[in-house]
Amino acid sequence: MQEVYDFLKQCGTYYLATVEGDQPRVRPFGTVDIFEGKLYIQTGKVKDVSKQIRQNPRVELCAFDGDKWLRVSGRLIRDDRVEAKEHMLAGYPSLQGMYSATDDNTEVLYFEDATAVFSSFTSEPVTVKF
Image (cartoon, rainbow, N blue to C red):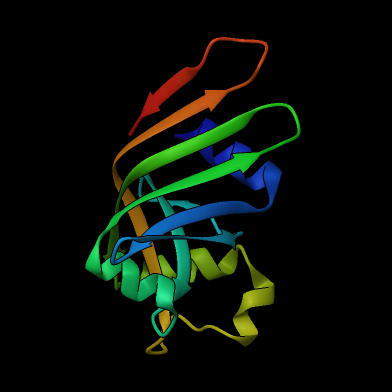
């Protein structure tokens, strides 16, 4: 899982895919954290992406560093604990003006039953499960 986190941090931006009814939805994300041995992302509960995840927690993200790409699929589980939110926001000071660990909007979610696949045109895919 650490190599997944490191790759996402290096890329800075990754793209998260959800489903709204039968329509796929993809948007850029930039938050990632490891807390208590789990890979977390962050969003706002008022956003459509949060509503889509509540309806169907199966998601996939994709990131590309110019040479290799990473796809991570799994279920996102909401963690409402203040400690998890504080840990995430500590790594992203620029978000602290918009989000707080104690507001009713900040949402952190961790991957469960995740499969990550690192790929490139020059080497065989490498799969990591967590």
